[in-house]
Image (cartoon, rainbow, N blue to C red):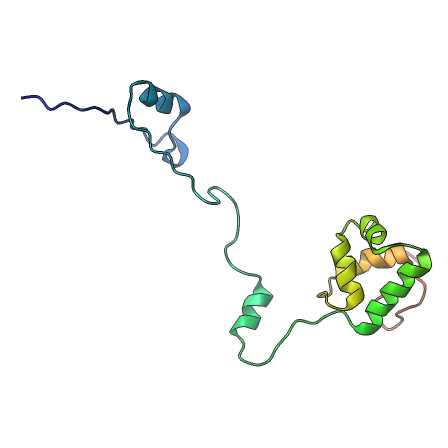
Amino acid sequence: MAAACDFDVVTIGKKHKGGQRSKEAVNSAMRQGGDVDTQKKFSAGANKQSSANKNTAKLDRETDELHHEHVPLDVSKLIQLSRQNKGFTQKELATKINEKPQVINEYESGKAIPNQQVFGKLERVLGVKLRGKDKGKPLGAGPKK
């Protein structure tokens, strides 16, 4: 008595990366009426880190009342006044520094976590120093080394 099989098993050797089946092998199995099992894996092959930002993880581990620094109120007002003096809207300023309008809104309201790159872009476009002891002074073309 012979056992009858209604399906063919497609086996791919270790030559294929990650045991993936080639299109030819899958098509062949489908043509012969075999079952083809497909699985979609979430973020498969993506180079993503699953861990949170170091600062966030550090804050989560702490038991004390710690918080991230925010843009000081004097700097946020300085950004707002400088932007208005130049005649820019928040959206126009954001476009000039290649950031989202929400970033400008957060900096002006004092809710943003300070980023030195964003401060540098804002200083160049607005022409005002936003960092250091001489905040609010015009950004001079100092001597370059």
